Image (cartoon, rainbow, N blue to C red):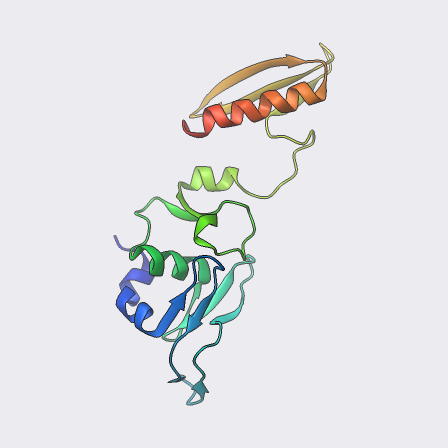
Length: 171
């Protein structure tokens, strides 16, 4: 099933009426048009219509508000990611719509990329009181992958980073 953006708007319409700059992430209206309220909308301006409750930039196109990162992706690639893939902001900044910062990801990978601060600075590090050491481990496809026990937090962080790189392609 097609994404609702693809169902409602043809990419050709977007490319005729808007310009997406993949380096800056901005989308500009190319032509002056008449809005649904009868007022003129001037061309050459950024199409941002606000930021939604989740922190994503929105743009109104043909009377509907869409997340700007979806419009950017659609204009750049000409199609939306196949379900169950969704568009993820790699650097976690929801207003950074440069194409180099957008990727197709599963919901699982996208959720792992959510902005939160782990207690010890890296994902997968916990303190074990019983052995008085840091343990580094991650869940990958339902299985726990261990990287070891560490007395020093710096060593644990290095191991966690290595483990993340090693398991990133497996998830």
